[in-house]
Length: 77
Image (cartoon, rainbow, N blue to C red; front, top):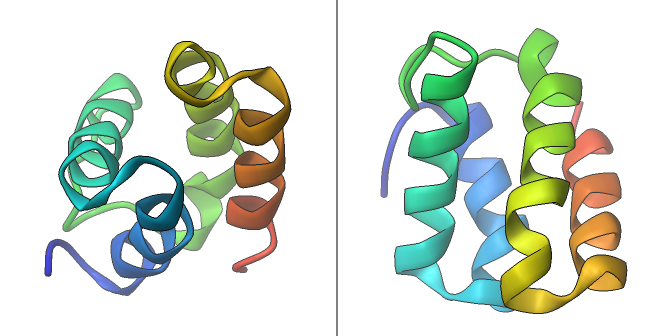
């Protein structure tokens, strides 16, 4: 497992779609884009993270699945 509770919940959404390794890498990368890491992201960061995830996961899983994953991530708060 990685990061805090928020990171764990995001990982739980993303792992079935892209696998655990890519899910963790995506969380780390997107957290860094907003000036944080997987230990310091909060529920207040969910919208920014999900917006970034949609854009950056689309090449791997397609736009529709990336958008659905982002909606699920937004729903964890």
